[in-house]
Structure formats: structure tokens, C-alpha cells
Image (cartoon, rainbow, N blue to C red):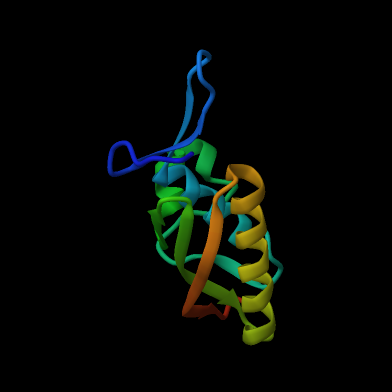
Length: 128
């Protein structure tokens, strides 16, 4: 059903006479980034801006700290994350993995096989 198009775009659906549905790899990365930053205990993606600022500077910066590899209908995700001080890193990471997997699969129909997380730092600004 899904066939590769350009290196950064995948056909999700071929609907015969109506046409096709394609998704760019960058969109999958953006979904992963947004899902990650929704988890309590995650400060931000390493090298990205906050969600509040994304509308001012553009969404292109939102995919920094995220790498996706889409092969056929399978997705592997690698995340570089900044955590908030005081949160349990393994527990928070598990929540991130679940949230990212569910978001990508629900929104795209692709299958997520791996969500690998690298803790790039801890935000020590306790009194926000």
C-alpha cells in the first residue's frame, strides 16, 4: 500500500481515482517533538525553542533534537531531551516513549518500532 516517493516524503494512502496522501519525514519529526514536550518533566528538546515561541520564529526549529527514519511503513525515532530537575528520568522517559509512539501511530498510521531517548541535560532553574 505505501511506497516510497522522494527521500523525505512517503505515500500513506493511494485512493485510486481520488489521489494519494503523502507525509514528509519532517512532519513525523514535528509530531514526535510536540508529543515529547507535552510530557511533564520534559523541559524541552535539546536545541529547540519552547512551544510558546514556535509561532514567533517558525516551526522549522521545532524538529531540532529529533531524528526520524522512515522505512516503508515503520518509523524509528531518536530524541535528544532536556529534563526538568527533580523528575524521575526512567519513568519520564517511558512516558515520552509511549506518548511519541501513540501520537505518530494515531496521526499517521505508520508503525513506530523504536523511540530512543538521549538525556542531553537537566534544567536546574528550579524557581521558574
